[in-house]
Image (cartoon, rainbow, N blue to C red; front, side, top):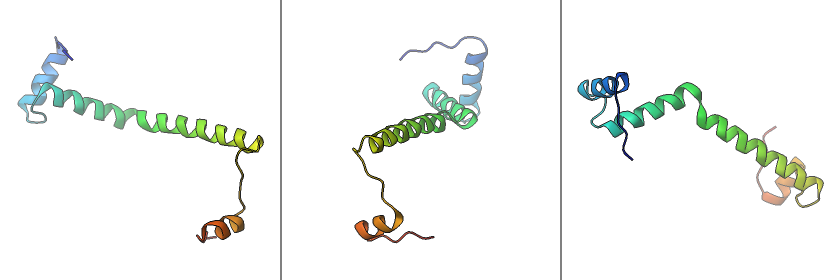
Length: 85
């Protein structure tokens, strides 16, 4: 990928490299992407959306009889794991 920086973005990239925060323009871009994630929680929102889709799919499959829900007692018996209550 070729990215040409001009104006303020070019100055920011240069300053990040000059200050030692990054060694290359690619490093600066990666740091910027990480900062975007920290500020806006983009991956967290994406994971939440995926979890919601999965839960809706599972609810539908349970309603259709394709999956079964187990009580805590049934789960413990079937798996051998104890659930802390």
